[in-house]
Amino acid sequence: MSKRERWSALLELLAAEGRLDVEEAAGALDVSSATIRRDLDELAEQQMLVRTRGGAIAHGVSYELPLRYKSSRHASEKQRIAAAAVDLIGDGEVVGLNGGTTTTEVARALALRASGGQRETTGVPSPAFTVVTNALNIAGELAVRPQIKIVTTGGVARPQTYELVGPLTMGVLNEVVLDAVVLGVDGVDPQLGIMAHHEDEASVSRLFAERAHRVIVVTDSSKLGMRAFARICGLDRIDVLVTDANISAETSARLVDAGVKVIAV
Image 1 (spheres, rainbow, N blue to C red):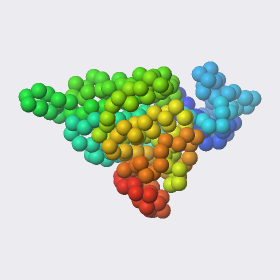
Image 2 (tube, rainbow, N blue to C red):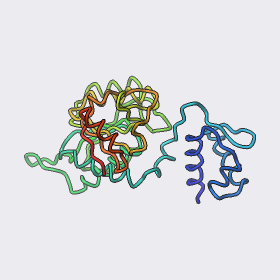
Image 3 (cartoon, rainbow, N blue to C red):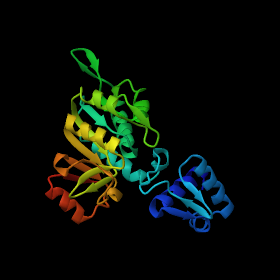
Image 4 (cartoon, helix red, strand yellow):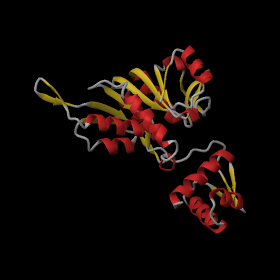
């Protein structure tokens, strides 16, 4: 197991339990206690946890893994979800993408689809898609794709998710109209709707939804039935939810009853 994989596993354990014990973590990861101590010391230096005698605790009640350590979680499911979501996007459409690991996979799937070349309108090449995003990593990946027109918002960057947030972000989104938006979320609740861990990200995602003709939510099934701190919008604003095949029949039925089309892949 590489250091990156160990760190990801340790942070997931910390997110689930709220605290870590060196000996228990060593047993769970099948490595030495000395290795775990070094890992925890390095993670503490990066302010990703608080070191304690014999272990570590999370920084706060609500703990969020940085994007770079979440990318390997449910990776195959996210790729299938992304492919299914891109099938819902028409050629030449203007698409909004917020930040997150699943929407990053959607951006990659869009890039693959666009690689066939640009369309022509009255002899002038036009983009296969126009992507509006507040995610710096998505913008970086798509900026080198000449078939895709990429529009980024301004704003203040959040290091955990690479998302731009704040008044500058909202100002740009208020000036655009989207055919569709694909939203990654931190929780989906049948009563409360879709949610994010942070209120600034939720505000941006809410405006994305308001500016779009169609709202597509992409999430693996682990987030269904979960709640997060900040509400984005109710299920009545969601057109389609794309998730993996592990969604329960009960959850699917409740979403459908709320008017949401569910695609499980």
